[in-house]
Image (cartoon, rainbow, N blue to C red; front, side, top):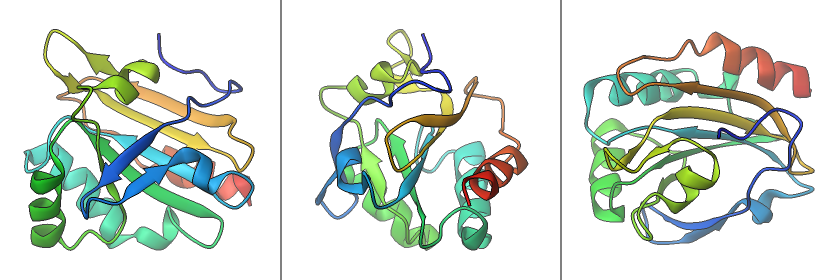
Amino acid sequence: MTVEVGSQAPDFTLKNQDGQEVSLADFRGDKAVLLVFYPFAFSGICTGELCSVRDDLSAFENDDVQVLGCSTDTTWSLKAWANQEGYTFPLLSDFWPHGAVAESYGVFSADLGFAFRGTFLIDKDGVVRFAEHNGPGDARDQQGWRDAVKQLS
């Protein structure tokens, strides 16, 4: 079951593309988090979505909001992808235990072995303020993300 708006976001600690640990709790009381799950690095729709975030980063990330991408890819794959595409926001590896964080948010497919396209805006208190869940082939409309980020201000 997907985490719902108004619920407490499940905490996690994962390594980013540089091998550094990132915890949701690190942002508590300081920044909201736009948590963007996607199936795979280097895939067409995922690249298009994250390049859109990269190209309009100020609409999603600012002094009050941090973007975190998350997939079941390895840190090495995420590092290569971030370097190729010029992503400056953290890409988190939910590789092992495989998909555990995506599962806690209700967006992991155990049958397929990857995260669906789940997007969660988590406020400074750890409460989910926006949530969406799209299938692997369904690109997301990022206007909803922009609107949700604006509403936090």
